[in-house]
Length: 283
Image (tube, rainbow, N blue to C red; front, side, top):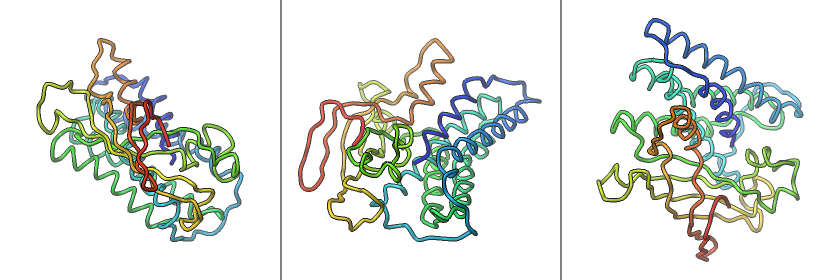
């Protein structure tokens, strides 16, 4: 899952984005997107592709790999990049309708480019499953904006270093940043539901209920490897986008960090066993 790289690059651009007048807004936002795109592609190449040989473009069927954790990761990345892309366009002064479509399609555009790079990599290959996941995540975001004009259900991510990476650092990563992208054993993907968006209560607007999906026991992508298992989570969450401060810069930072599931007590169901975590932030 490569959303961490993308969100870091978005952070570097959005942090300095300023409101522009209407005659310059679109060009400023578009120029920022081009810089963002170039920066992200450079970072991904340095972290992901540079050590692997190139090949002619080819397709692979990896839909059963990693117990579909990579597919959920693609959808979550597309969703989050689309949401931050819309934020970027709005901060550039672009109209709401243009911001939704130009920014909201950001995720699908980014990840389609990455899928193309995969297709030319001997180590991987382009995947129809990935493209479907990318499109799904993008339209989870755009669909909610069209239906509700807000994100009542957010797709989120959490990570904790797993015990498996040390056995396969070549595949699962040799340091924290690489593992946060490559080690699906330590990742959990969440659907975070805003309670008051569906039914107004006396609870604070920032309180969410979240359900998560993870997997473990994976030394490689083979779903039939002994010990691999699925994991299901239930927890509360904090909607950082609904927390308002008197500092505009801080509000931006909270929006950007909203892709992370806030560490809060959680239940995990896996291998017919229910486990309670007093403070949960990853697998």
